[in-house]
Amino acid sequence: MQVGVPAFRVGHARDGAWRALAAQCLAQIGEGQTRANFGWLYLTDHFADEVAEIREFLSARLGVEHWTGTVGIGVCAADAEYYDCPAMAVMVSQFPRDGFRLFSTARQDLDDFVTAERAWLDNAGALFGMVHADPTDGAMLHGLSGIADYLNAFLVGGLTSSRGRHPQIADGISEGGLSGVLFAESVGITTGLSQGCSPIGPSHDITESQGNVVISLDGRPALDVFREDIGDVLARNLHRVAGYIFAARPITGTDWGDYLVRNLTGVDEGRGVIAVGDDLRDGGQLMFCRRDRATATDDLYRMLADVKARLPGPPRGAVYHTCLARGPNMFESPDNELAIVRRALGDIPLVGLFGNGEISNGRLYTYTGVITVFS
Image (cartoon, helix red, strand yellow):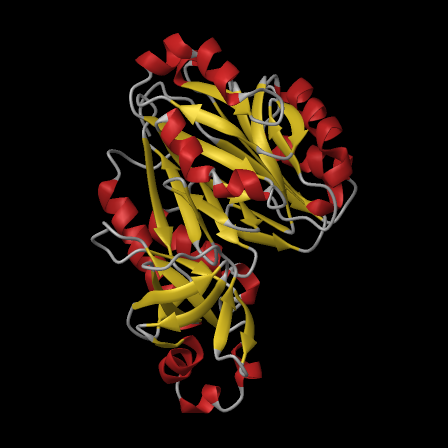
């Protein structure tokens, strides 16, 4: 750890009323022993109606003014995954006041934020944003890459996952839109993305589509191409592909074969068409992939090794945004996904979210894990 650089501190707890969990987190962090001015707060959706009260309580007890976070069906901290149970994960640290700015599109027009912070934005260098988004706000999600371009920032983060309200924390509490923190270039950050699905066939040209319906691929009926790619066993009973086979849109211009996984939302055997959970266009590309534990595990190790090799110094803390379909739903046992992260990066402070989608480089992903490491 760099001399004179305040440590990241983490507290986490499960199964109890929020005050009892907060007390456990405070005991782990060391109330009164930190100079922190910034914190992350992730709560399972059991506490979706109490986020404001919890944030105010922690802020008062820790003296931390600035917070970001949201709720999820699962949260994680250190080497523990808390899924579908009352749980809380808190991490605090200290950054230079000119090292970050918080924003929320639900509380302030983005133009107004940029105008108010123009001097800071002009002097902050290359911006890195850690954000949270409302999965029910379709217009914002479709415009995510435009927001990243407008802010001229590399955005990562996760979508709230909740069976009720979808609160986000960016100092205040809001619902809808996008919120989070922008870090200046002076804050040392390294990030990486790991896929949870692997391609099972080549990339195909979308030769005819309508909205989210694929009519033909490579000039042939889309369903015929789909059956060939998934193989004869699955093709004989298409009901078996649900939750196992997905569509993916290759991202052009990347040298590592990146792609955006999307759900298959329907098959019409009579018309020979398939429906995908995304807007499509003729002339685009589409391929098919499968959800694969072994491949996902290998890719997580690959991504973490790459991130570790790119770190400019020892890792001090990390935030992990992963899909709610990963964790105990994909890896061999509870806590195994976080155990892999710990084996790669060491025993560093970490908090994270099992979200309804992941964000990396201003794009919306699914079934992925996105790590952000501070050094």
